[in-house]
Length: 354
Image (tube, rainbow, N blue to C red; front, side, top):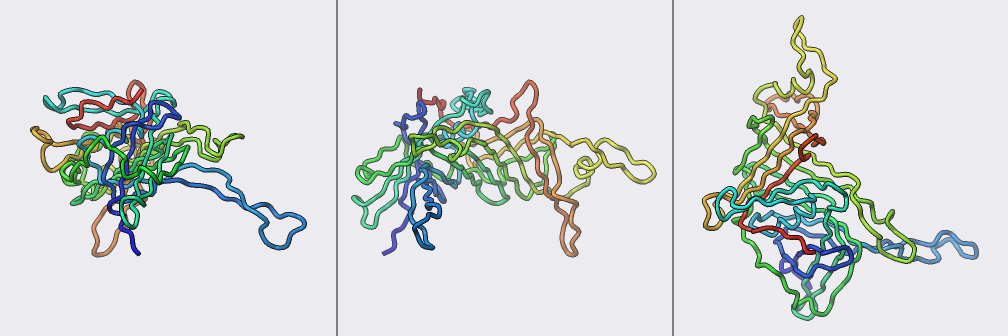
């Protein structure tokens, strides 16, 4: 028989410390989730006294990994994933109006600022209550966050997760409790409800993708004698990139990337070895206002210094129109955060368990 997956539940919760499973769980609707237990099974090396075939196998290690693809609801619980993905949080109360709060997520000052979370999946059985399967991952890190925006479409997010200890639950899954009801579709931002600015000027973009990559130590290099699980995951580097397609209006940005501040002489402008930099800001909102408020739910991404490059020269195609893809990487900036992400909603704060 076929078992539908639509009643499955993806949830997560902040951990007070490494090794301490979350006690409060938040669920979020998802388009696809493959976060779950992973194991590595290896074959014995060739041995004398045998034939031409493998003589044995063993389990090398166990851990958890995968990706959750969400249409992000901005009302509340997405903030826990953003906190775990980015590092630090400060909250500005009554912004942009009384009753709303601006939660500003910024990069960590130290590798130990990054948060541990737990992840669960409730997998439906063939007959309902009694044969559901639960997967529990303890000591998880958010390795990556992608936000993709296209015109005339809802925003999509992907969170890539790795965890130290995977476990299964066959009894009690039906009684798992959650701290929230599902948030509804009104909290999902739309691509045409927002603004993209480069250097303070609005830009016509046909799409934009932000990728936050947290480079942690990997499961294999964290293995130690006496444990089948990785010992830890520590942050080694954090990189934010933005890739967007410019709907060509004028050549100013393309010229700046190639020639910098050089001026035309004898009919040409010399190439410049200087890398072009500009700030970038994306703001997307929901189509309607937050419940009882005069402002919508909002997500904003900003970095003061992106270094930019073009995917190549603009392609000239008969019967086509001009567009050019640009990719930027957020750079460390003296005296300010490399980037910041803020979320405006009615949640009072995201106080990490202690």
